Picture (cartoon, rainbow, N blue to C red):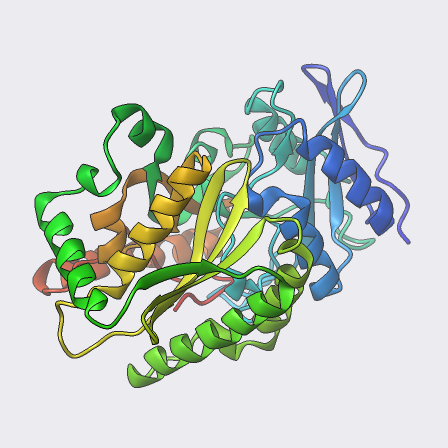
Length: 406
């Protein structure tokens, strides 16, 4: 094992170090302890991070920010040497992802360094400063003395302000709007959730519910144990795979790592109540499945699969999500989050939330400058094509040097 990095920078009472992977039991304990003091998302929780480390079988570097008494910042950084258009490799660090298409099919959002809630988000910038300013921080191999790139995938829009370091440039690889429902606001209004939607959406949901009721009672059932949850997951996988196959595309379930990760996540987290799978039916007929994460009152609608019919009056997505939202409204949740990416049902059922960004910080160089110019040209061409088509896209999304998005 490498020796711990001893080069340090103390800024605003925080001392940063980049250390070899800790024993998993120690990392688990320290991460959970800081998680309790942080405004962390599910994707920053040990439920997600611990499963990711175990299933990927990796030993990332541990970025640690220590305050006067406690650890106040943690992040796991995976060393990588990505290819670029010039065929040049750079020395990079990746925050909570691996730079491999198969393994990054998990789609992490609300990513970021785990930060004590009493510490300003400026700690993010100080951590990044440390990584780029201190020559010994990356420690890729004996002959390398500096970090070329830092990849921040699926981070919230605030990172655009704080992801800077002297001598680097910030490159935005993608921006995707998220969509959410503020359940606390709905409670204070003394009106049901559906009453907050547009007249057209209300009409579509109510008409679809009347049609489904002709088949029998509509039931949204949450899996009650791990075995039932895994059964729902298998059925969701089947519906989703068939849906994308009809469109000539491959679903994320085709990646073995994706499959192994989610089975482990369900097995570990259903008993803790931080993962839920729901089946929605009308009589004996299936409407769809929902696969959600729950964390500190926040519901993350991670994946869904619906049975679409020839008659467009049936709206399985609108109905299933509306029923699930109503259930979480009764149970006291705070936010129902559709996560990032454009879909019509998200815009109909939710309000705009934070943008999710893929950002890379780079040391300037000719080859990377040319690559960034070509990336901007590709974005401009994509926008021009989108404006001329009838397709209604979301915000800009395009391929990063590390992964291919579907």
